[in-house]
Length: 279
Image (cartoon, rainbow, N blue to C red):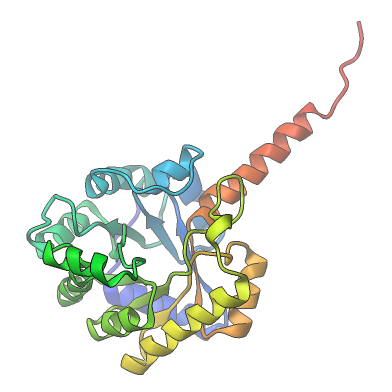
């Protein structure tokens, strides 16, 4: 079984990685074999999201019902093979258990063994003011995700936050988030990527940088990574690092879906690429 890391231990590890000039890599891992290989590859964080169930089943990233319970149940499989890497769990603030009391919800994740939390599923990608206002009126708006980060920070739990707009990045930074993850949208590439709606890499990087600047203006100590859109391959992250201040990358489809699609397809083709001896 793996170990649970304190907030300060995680921050110290991440800052050391940055000081060594290496990118911080957070690897979405929805199956033990993915998590095990991600750790062997040097991942700094193992990310567990309920939506990963869809990716592992061969589908496009999709939100699932009972997200928190699904994520909590995923922990045992990941923990069984991850030894020395912090495991971060995605929390949906709109679903039980503990949705009425965010401190209780965060504690459920901590008690089962997660070393940190992130606001996922997140509903911050909607920019329609009326839609956002309706959700706020229902008590399940993006402000609830901000409150999740504030509560977890006060509990001294390591926090990460997905954001889609500079104003939300600023507010999340003010709430005390440890690691900001500017989100460029659904990941493109592979067999079921969001290619049709993904912005060009140049635009994705520009959007990420605007969110990083908003974050740093509010709190220069926040670690900023990036995720999604056309930022989908190692070569894409080279462009990201050359054109933004991102300190690393969070990969979900980029790590647990697209590489598996490619590897399995190619190895089966290789196995088929022989002519049997005629008898």
